[in-house]
Structure formats: structure tokens, C-alpha cells
Length: 162
Image 1 (cartoon, helix red, strand yellow):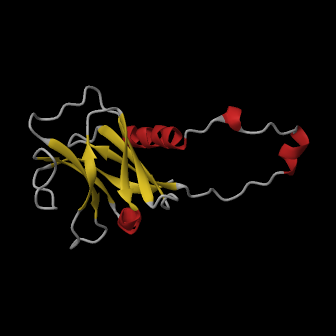
Image 2 (cartoon, helix red, strand yellow):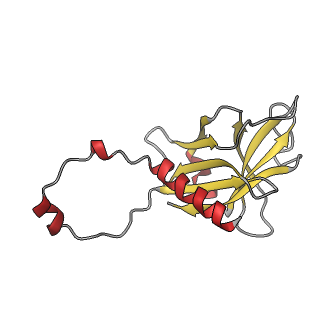
């Protein structure tokens, strides 16, 4: 299971970074020799959420800073086959606290579409960057009425810097 999770993380990183070699300017061999490797640039964070059987189900990624509009866009990609949601329920994404005494913070509702973007206010940035991971709970239609998870966490995963 660890090997499978690491493989998914590697693939997820490639997908999240979405590198397009065609968009890069061509460089001459002499320019390539003159270049020195630099430290990797941190561009954001991601979480690979898995189910109770440790099967990867969802990727969530977000930037290290808010956009010019004061919003943060979280990219959600469902990677499990045939996602199903219990009737008359909603899936709600949560930022899991780093400290044991902390409480999860609601991020937004997730549908069954393979790729989604959740736009949240920049005030969530600190919570997202300090999160130990993300979780997805099964909630009543429209989400948790209490501001805390009321249903089971059906998927969860640690946050990673990318």
C-alpha cells in the first residue's frame, strides 16, 4: 500500500504541476551547459485523500498565496473509479488541524465531477497552509449544519508541499 500511495503521489505531482514542455523556450546546448541547478520552487500544497482501504480517491491542491481577487482556488480531482455519493447527502471537504486539540475547518462542498475548483476567501489561507491534511465527510444536503463534521470522514490524507 505504501508503494501504491507513493506512485499515486508521484503521478499526482506531475498532474498538479501540469508541466508543458512546448510552452518553454528552446535553449541551445551551450545555454544548457551554463545553467546551474537551483533549489526547487515551492508552488503550493496538495493532499492525496484515500479511503479506509488506503486506496487513493481524490487529489486536492492549492497555492501558497491568494490571487489578486482575494480568493484561493483549490483544485479537486477525483481519481477513483465510479465515484458514488449516498442519496440525500453532500460531500464536504475539511482542512484537518495540525494540533491534536484543533477542530477541522470547512473548506467547501465537493460534487461528483472529475475536476472541480473550490474558490475560498483568502482568510482561509493560514488554515490551509498549516493543515496536517484534508478530509472529506458525508454530510446532510448542503453540508454540515454545525460547522463541524457530523458524518464520517470517508476520505483523508496528509498535506504535502509541492
